[in-house]
Length: 283
Image (cartoon, rainbow, N blue to C red; front, side, top):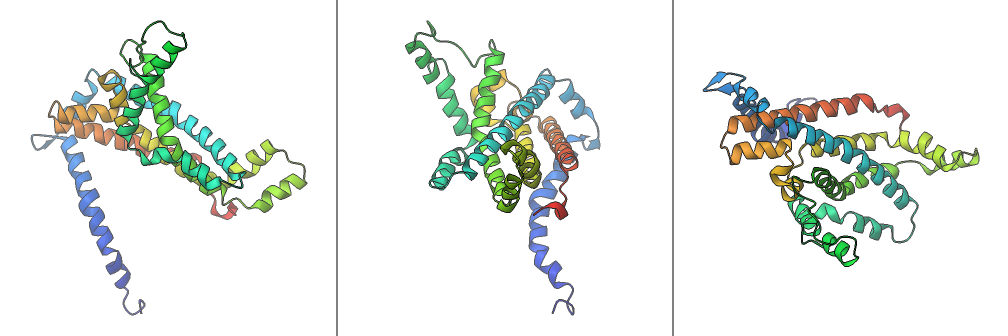
């Protein structure tokens, strides 16, 4: 039927294309124009104002530093958790359910949970004081303790976002044929050799997807940072929020949004190039 009516496939995808154009392409074009225009004319004044902002350099540094620290740790933890789950027989679903609980918690709620733990009168200080480790309440989330603040935000992000990485990696591990591992065992390959030579190459598509997703989300981190550090730990999305809501300057906020998009696209292209997936070599 489609041979006589070649327009039918295009008609079927038309609603999806219209939806994407209305809710994604149009706002994207408007945002780019808002960022690169001034009084209706093309201009780089907004970008210049963003670059010369006092918090711009700090926000870029903090965002990249948080991404560089958090994403590898999440991948490593998720690989360990996924490997452990793959070897579990009974209770596997229960373990997965417990480990994925953070997925059901919003970013802001996760930040508030860790705030209740790490604030001056929080559970962590109470525990240390009760054990006699500290003699008075310690401040972990102030501008006077930047290292402790960074570690607190990194730990909160790792706790919140590792579950989604684990789910992707577990799905990839389930696609690895058992025959490959059994053959490697017969030929005397040890656990590390099997993991490095068989498991990792075969789950490369899952790793690629997990890295792209978590890196993009790491560049967009905001709620956890805002709950724990506020303006003491500026990040790119946080500065975009401040320019839009506090300064009421939508143009500079749009420049921040475009910058985040460019960084995310660049990271995605790097991962696609570095972790090439050859379909012919997959099981």
